[in-house]
Length: 113
Image (tube, rainbow, N blue to C red; front, top):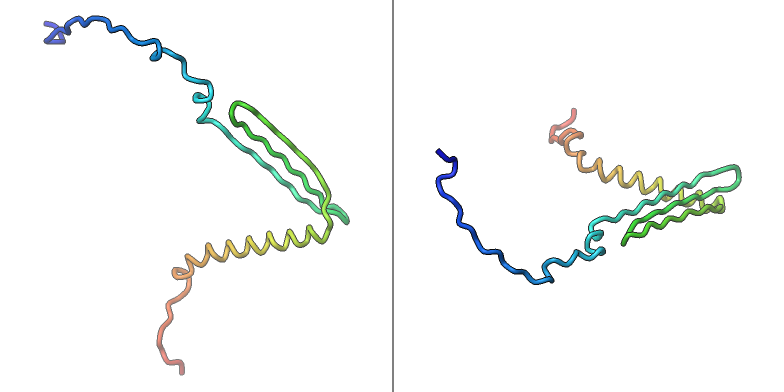
């Protein structure tokens, strides 16, 4: 006994237009893949501050990269570090504020003697 109870009828071959067989454009193939990478480093060395940065990206089938270095005024470095520290403390406080209701004891209306 056959595992298929019915047989498929043979169908005639259809002719198709040439347009259906054109290759996909190259740009459409690569449209889904791209990336960007960046890196920055600021350090204090002696009486000056140094800045290094690197960037790379791949878009539309092209890879491009650049890097540069420079020196900053020490006062600019101090202002930058103060801003970064203030931003970090503010973000940490904002994150911890969401948990403060769970960490702090509830207020009670007891009279103190």
